[in-house]
Length: 168
Image (cartoon, rainbow, N blue to C red; front, side, top):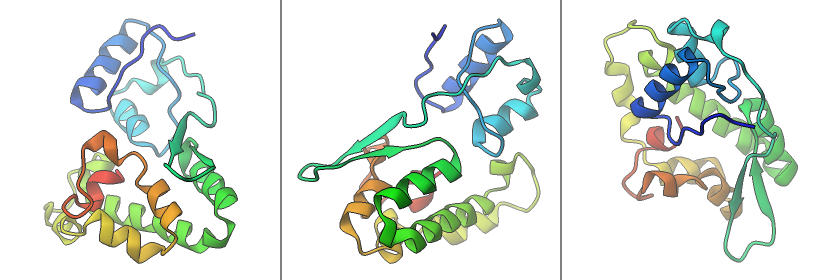
């Protein structure tokens, strides 16, 4: 049972979560290493939160004309293992995708809540389009669709949207 559902993880969603948690409202699970965990820890809130893990497969990707439903799991290990179970021949592509996301995130100091660097490192990845990056990682069209399955949430254009915006 949830007290409140916060839709969105932008500044409004984050502030709503901070205010609600300070008032004792329940917030869903946060794992170490994930963005919100880092933000809440930095804000001194993690020790004050009552956490409960969501179901392992909370997000589902449906692709028109494809029989399977693809479940996305929490955390990198859950995400990777679920994808590899759906695409066993693509294990290396999935690992390469994971490494690419980590490499892109490393270019943004605020992702780690630090002010180290001058911020110019991010420019090296800002022009990498989501379509070109995904196609460079795998030729499996179904896996490509699954990897960009939440793009509709960002109203993206695969030929114009930078990879970094889709996979933060």
